[in-house]
Length: 114
Image 1 (tube, rainbow, N blue to C red):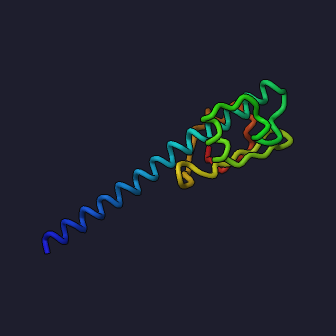
Image 2: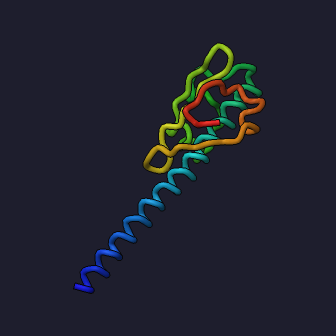
Image 3: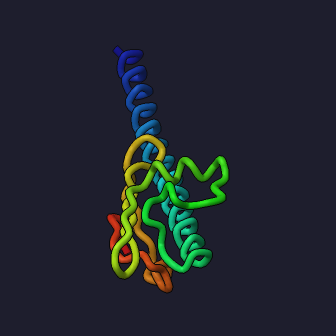
């Protein structure tokens, strides 16, 4: 009986650790994906004077920039753009950034919380 309890405890601990690992990894990938997409959109605006119509319009993408591009949903707005995080590593994390993060950006709407 003691072996069963120890075995179940070990399985439960591994499941909790796995869940925590997934949550942390989703948050790290989501954070990187979101910030990279913001940087690419803002750089496009500096170079071209307008925000891109679509993310596929962004020029000079690096190989590693493709992951953030497919991890967000983008739309240009009349006064800026909307950028929503659609995935982190495998799931969709909930991210929050301080008010200073949003200053000076053309980002007007997002599912990422201020």
